[in-house]
Amino acid sequence: MSEIKVINGEIHSDARGFISSLNSFRFDDVQRVYFIHHPDTSVVRGWHAHQFEKKWYYCVKGQFSMAFVKIDNWENPSPDLKPEIFELSEEKSEILCIPPGYANCLKTSIPGSVLLVFSSKVMPDALEDSWRYPNTMWVDWVK
Image (cartoon, rainbow, N blue to C red; front, top):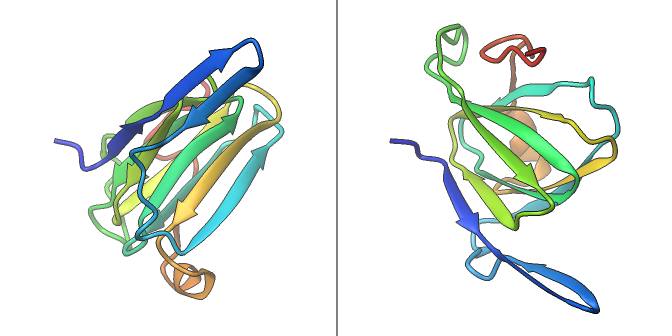
């Protein structure tokens, strides 16, 4: 069973526009917030992993395909790990909660997409807990 959780939000619309909300999300563990602006559909961003950092992802604009694998060996992870793939879109108010121990990789199909990221670690701690792997591992993004 996956340790990754999806928190479903709400979207309310009327003649004035719409409001996206995440009323079930709690900020208790959040230490920093940043945006990823992804202007190019050909770019694959990842794999980036953290042993101790927890992350939450929310699509502000556009759409993202996101893949996650639980790392089995930090120095030499198995090439046979099976990724969990999620689609985040501005049309659906939901946030992905990723526990520590996972690597992430993402790609967009809509130029100019924007992803909001919450992290459980301040920047100096996150930098000490940063693992990178080739973006060709675990998912064939060309398909």
